[in-house]
Amino acid sequence: MTHTRDLSVVSPGRIHYAEGLKLQEDLVKKRRAGDIDDTLVVLEHPHVITLGSSSDIAHILVDDEERVRKGIDLHKVGRGGDVTYHGPGQLVVYPILDLKPHRRDLHRYMRDLETVLIGTAADYGVEAERDEAGTGVWTKAGKLAAIGIRVSSGWITSHGIALNVDTELRYFDTIVPCGIPGRAVTSLERELGFAPALSEVSETLIRNFCRVFGHRSVTGELTGPQ
Image (cartoon, rainbow, N blue to C red; front, top):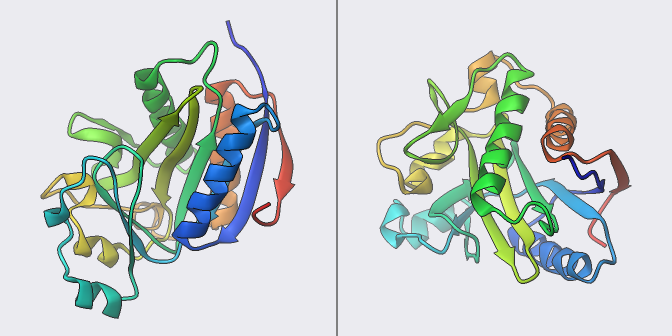
């Protein structure tokens, strides 16, 4: 049985990673209290490397001096997973969802996020799939999207997915993406030979998210952090 809910979208544009963390923290509190609907935060970040709860510092392949020279920030965060990179041209989506009462299954939640990404890629004619190497979505050319989530008390989700649209892939050379050595990274631009607009990809992903998670509408589009 599908249990439909309304879905709000917060689109603050390109904001620093620390601002994104604070925005998520505020929205998680509001969702736990029932003050807001399920919400997607859809944004970009400036160049940043993030370390999840199972990260190995050795998976950062540049020293601090080189990292600073390249303009890459660094954050340790409370999501699952290893090291990852965010930057301009990458669509980052943080679902702030209440998984109660019918979706309290973290394995299912991760697979559903992968299904959203696979469907989004398919809408552009790109064949993407899961891989036994780890969570996320791959094409034959490499990893297209990463997933790292957090579920806090009350079964409220945060953090989420990062889809490479027209990301500068050379920045991934500074890390071992998701701690999996020897695996290439790709983007929609590399797969298609052109870069679709980030706003268009965002709309496509939101449509797939509603389809997979059973949300009936998208409301409350915002222009910045509230």
